[in-house]
Image (cartoon, rainbow, N blue to C red):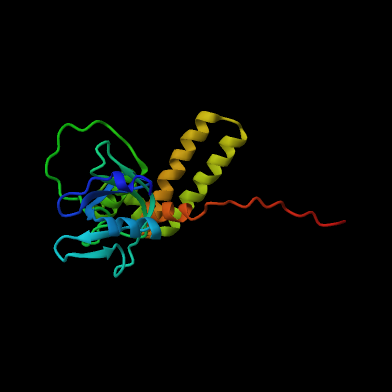
Length: 215
């Protein structure tokens, strides 16, 4: 709050706020704040914006339930724009999508990259299109029982390789487990975001010691 007086608002008393997913780094939306909405956001630790069209304040998720919980707020070197990193309870876009930025305008040469989110989206595409000859298609065709069997098998493989203290084999089997777990999540219509949100709630992990039964 001590930097509030250094912020540069425009001639309408507004400052642009780029909202970013704290976990994935994905840009969710671009909105505007005035000093009042910024103060409210800081006090309530959830995003509150100023609507330029309605000329009023609005709290994200007030009607939809898709609240954005603020982790941190950053300002640029000129103090005239903000980046707000959030943990969100649901989609950021009013169209029901995770981000407002989903229309491809231009695509240049992309570097090779990989993320579990990318893999999940690929699995989702396989579920929607069911291309012939795809192992993922095979799993979806066989159904949840087969998918669960594979998850169980891969869990066992991870345990065995770790017990053997075989580092490379543990990495390999863990990758297999991660893939099959993502297939299960897709089959159950569970988003990776929901897992991240659940983990974010577990700030303190209690260490419990199993009590010995007196002989």
